[in-house]
Length: 383
Image (cartoon, rainbow, N blue to C red):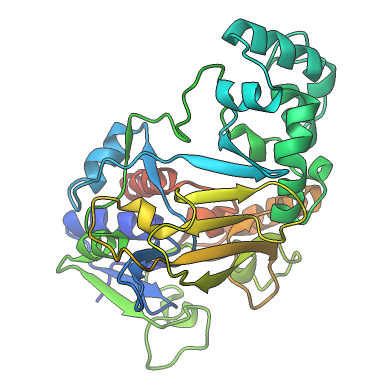
């Protein structure tokens, strides 16, 4: 007999399951896909043997020492440091925006203080990254202009955001862009966290070890919200019998009774160019509207320490669009109407006995992997 049912085998759900299993609880993990790990799943490309991230680039980074130590029990880490570039009007620039980006864009050789003064003037704030007229609103556009000024915002953010979110920037929350750092030095690292890297043996191996416990039973290919049958646990079968941690879409759990929450999904166009290096970096963003894709991922660069083919590579063109009813939800759009619906769902969740909602889909919140694991550790403590 199970003591807890965890619905969804992503980083959050697996963390909850592992901690409670180690404390003597029998946990059943129900996953509708045919693998664990959620979107942070990787597998070898059949044509080249190159490990690909099946749902887009997933780069682990954290400042949370507890999370780092917890996951390090199940994997060793490479020394990978993520760096991104972007194409704009026929040139390639480093991202996130740093002193190299600024000087290349303005054809200048500004010092850090000179660059700060220029951006402050263009932002209309009097202080780069500070508050003022341009930051008076709470939208992505307001925050973007206040952080980097209008010329850089229009070059690198505005069109890219339009492709990525399919939503006007003034309808998106400022939190979308605050995740992107702005630096007035030549540090081109995408993340500044002290702990960064990729699992040495890949994400699939990491999650398999995390779930490998005699008190954890994983049921794959089972939709928890489908009618009860012999295929595995269901909502109907668990009601009043076993507590549930639900990590699927919160609006789906409640039958979209308050309306559908807005999600962004991603499509991938996979190809195998006959070269050992297609673009020279793992991720190349395309900031302009003349390219319909948002970025191109070349997966071999995630593991330069591996012996991959010298005459073939694998890439994925990434396209973004609003998620339909049958699409995989990736990122919450979080428009004002979504936030109103979410408040209603949170009220329903608070009144749902024996069910805890968590993870990216269950909270309707963008969570990096380390944030999901940290939330899983916190909920496990509570339970």
